[in-house]
Image (tube, rainbow, N blue to C red; front, top):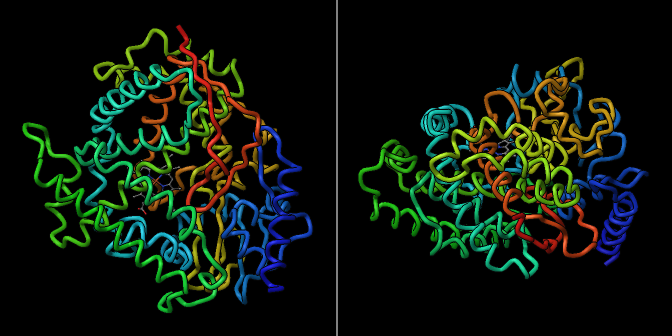
Length: 464
Ligand code: HEM
């Protein structure tokens, strides 16, 4: 199997290069000699961060051939603005993105286009206005308080903070959007999402080559996955419909079920919001804790800022505006480890974006992973420095910082996520000194989101 061996060799070589370059915070880069289209496609299945060549972190645009099509890695601000804000109608999600995400998200908001997208966005948006943040803060404080009590009990043992953050974020998403406690189904839901990201969510060569209507061999397994996944989502919906909370103002579920009469569409939206609403925030929290564990002075400042505040259910909403430093740490963690590592678009027609010609059907990659570590856009891009985001610091260059995207398809849950990450980080760091329990290198790996290559154990000690 010479092709397979080539590939294994190529990926091993990429990994060796990226590990040699591992630094604090670790970065993954592609091999210096530049990869073939096949090498790029295979790196995308192994770790998409390795598919960005070193020059992407220095140049405004890198253009390469990708199986007969142009692939354009864009870091020029005017070009990014053109694509995401000025002319978004000319760009749609790529077939490979749709193949990878459709089994999980169906035809919900993230994967819809055109009039269908506009209608869905209008329906969902009212649930994410600033008006809803106090209620959200209450849910966050309750769920985080319960986790901190549990962790305080088992402080002596090493803790898997990635898994803890994934369960916490799922609990918060379930309670705040759908008034659902996730204690009964959380483990099964997490197992399905994790299993998908580890195996079926990895694109193969054929996922890039075949037109969308032709199933790739892996698609049959993805369809089986989807049947199991949607059966679970339908059970959650049935449970929520039977136990409508009394005396509370309607939640997002009430709004969606009034607007959407088609049960399959309702299930897709539910799956989209519950998945997009917890997986990304959980990894953002993991990376923030990982960075703080490595910099005790940052942890000390967060703890001091949070010490006088009421972070309980009644006080969390008000405390938020005073967690200025903690929020800057979250923003800096989102810079170094953006959970959504790339926004991929395919051009419908030929266009010129900020002076760069984009041929019809070209794939454009606007990659927070690249932009956030770009030599031209940041001073010492590899350095963890929350002061970049403190009031009074010069704002990042336009389009240099896009953890939540930009334009009409900007993340609908951005404020939700920032509120959650800030309150959880403050409460965790105020309660515990956190340090790594081992010293094995942790490499970021991007499949569906930017995750650690393995969940490192942490040691927690009560702060007071
Ligand atoms: C740190 C956490 C999060 C990050 C980094 C993140 C990132 C993003 C990004 C970059 C996009 C735009 C994708 C594109 O333009 O291709 C997006 C879209 C989206 N996000 Fe988030 N997100 C986060 C949390 C959330 C939360 C908490 C929710 C819901 C509760 C959510 C729901 C969505 C949805 C539904 C879309 C699609 C919007 C549309 O296409 O109109 N996200 N997210």
